[in-house]
Length: 163
Length: 95
Image (cartoon, rainbow over the protein chains, first blue to last red):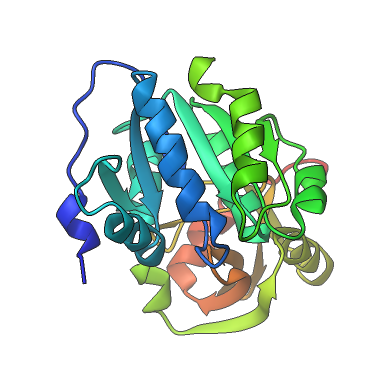
């Protein structure tokens, strides 16, 4: 079993950076869309950093064993501690949301980080979740549970890596 | 968030929403404060949609605790020093 701590190396970057805040990995599309977003960000010259709980990060580590896409990954609580402590921040922030906890994490990132905030909303109840978000952020939302294509399409339309 | 999980806590609400926790505190705890997301309680950054309400009941602190896979819990922990520190926060004049 890969150890999440093995990939916990700070990213040295002089360019633009992004943090992907992963939610509970119980909805299959999260890992797929996260890897796709990492790919698009890197292609645009933006360094992505992933933050999540152990399961969410381990899913990425196992899916990308040669580390073609995944760079720095760290524990979600540690990322929040670093940002709150002003030790680091990012230019872009993507929070993956399919439940109420995801909304709480997005609001928290919006409050503690100066990053441009995007919410990536999916799952069966994506529309009610999107409607309940009333703090400033870009919303990328689609009904996607097993099939990532509707969410990929929305992501491509917004193309936040080009903003 | 090992600090809170290692403390003796009582769960008041389980798997609830941030809004349910906020409303519960406003309704049941006349003495409360609002704090911003990321504010530290028991050395842990609190996650939530502002305003995040925390309540007091004697030496007990009542506050929301969010985990990605389990939603938000409303917890009750007895700690005189932390209650005193949080009580010293300014009270917002209106909500």
